[in-house]
Image 1 (cartoon, rainbow, N blue to C red):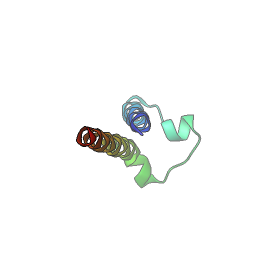
Image 2: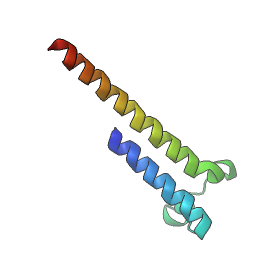
Image 3: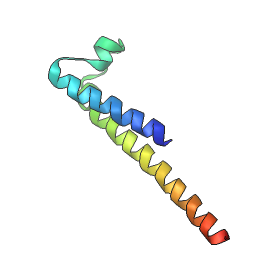
Image 4: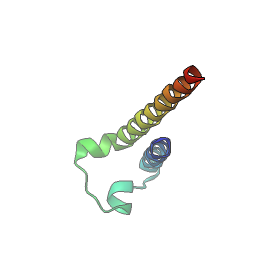
Length: 72
């Protein structure tokens, strides 16, 4: 899940930087026409989703490490 989070964050960064340079990730590259609201905030949505996935996976690893430490 950490890898998926990192991928979403990277896609969000590409989308954000591309929007300032004239590159349209969703419309030009993927061929999807997003509604105006989602098109405006798509990069932020992708980065937040990636951040949440990354943190969710990190919390799971901490819980497993604590369980192993308590078992010893």
